[in-house]
Image (cartoon, rainbow, N blue to C red; front, side, top):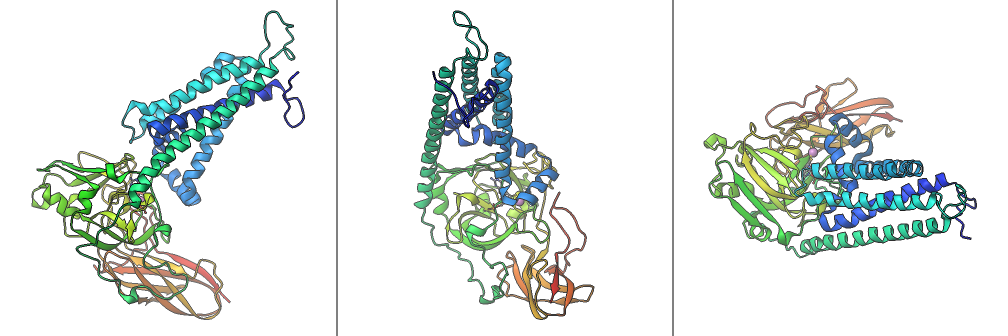
Length: 527
Ligand SMILES: Nc1nc2c(c(=O)[nH]1)N[C@H]1C(S)=C(S)[C@@H](COP(=O)(O)O)O[C@H]1N2
Ligand SMILES: [Mo]
């Protein structure tokens, strides 16, 4: 006689029913993953449900998640979804033991949630996105039905003893087979998915960035201070902050990439390939990018040397005129391959600033995380209104006619970067020794430039910090302040003044709707 043993004891039918539920859940995800590998990785149920929850999360909760989990927020979300799924799967198994039909129907209901989530995503272009969740749920419902069948007493000829008459051998074989088949399907799905990613990676590896017709001026030697603990002037790609809604980083094959420019006032609509873009006269510029969600003193700001095509030139070739010269469109809506939409003032893009369709970042093709093959970068505007990654479409329209993704979620339509400054060293609660302590950090006011940075110790007077050399007004600027520190607890506060003469406000505001304001301060104890 076969027997099922778990931890050396004979499990009850209840335990086995819960395990059946879990196996059904596992099968659902595995089958869905396999189907999604062929349809679209983003259509898989965990990613779709995760993405749909991100879309629907109220702003305060999203801010809270970003604050507490940082860039791990996506991982926490997915683990949360899997844990919830496991709980309900086990529960459905138990229900199925009493009510076999209801249990299986419950599994199908979960499929419906997955399908709804997948079809609701902004990047869902086709009904095939429903297939992963649909087929996964059907497979799971059938499996649960079958496994519970093995656990239920065999009626008819045999001895009708409910607790002993069930098909142990049948259950063990079926459960093991299901587990092995699911693991196989999942692994196959991964393999197919990775294969696709490889084509994109190969297309990235084969990119040779042309030399810029208009190179960036070399960074002045004095732009980088030699103070330990200060953020480097140029942020290495691997340390560059990442903020986006993508649970799966889009892996775009550059050889099949196109960018369309169309819409109101576009006299000659344009379709560009990646090669078309590389063949243009490229410019190289160092530009500091900032996220609107950055808290005062926060880390979501970075400076990189971008290389790309001048966006204004492309627009002019397409016949676009800025509103100040009678053009009908005042908003440029950029759309990414993952359905994100970002709206930028046409006037800003065409006012002479170095708005780019960037193909390179710090000397290499854009990393996948930062928008390969092409992204927008516009000096002076927060990322969510300018820096579309994985861009594939540019539509000229009006602010009146269309609200992009974050504007629909209560963020401002227009969001120039606010003047900000940050103390990088000493860190909060540091315990430096009395004597000269180097206080240093960065200040930014992209496209206006930094005129002055001042430091205040406790309630003392504002005293000017030493400014590092300015690269351009589109980049941040380092500063330092040799502080004669006396023993005791002290509060250091920083403020910047931009080149228009405006002093960074003390008025505190949260990031929503158009960027945090207020001043960064740290408390240290001098020993
Ligand atoms: N496709 C896409 N592009 C996007 C986003 C996004 O979620 N999806 N986020 C924007 C935001 S809010 C910011 S701050 C910048 C961040 O760019 P980075 O991740 O390269 O630092 O990208 C912008 N571009
Ligand atoms: Mo952002």
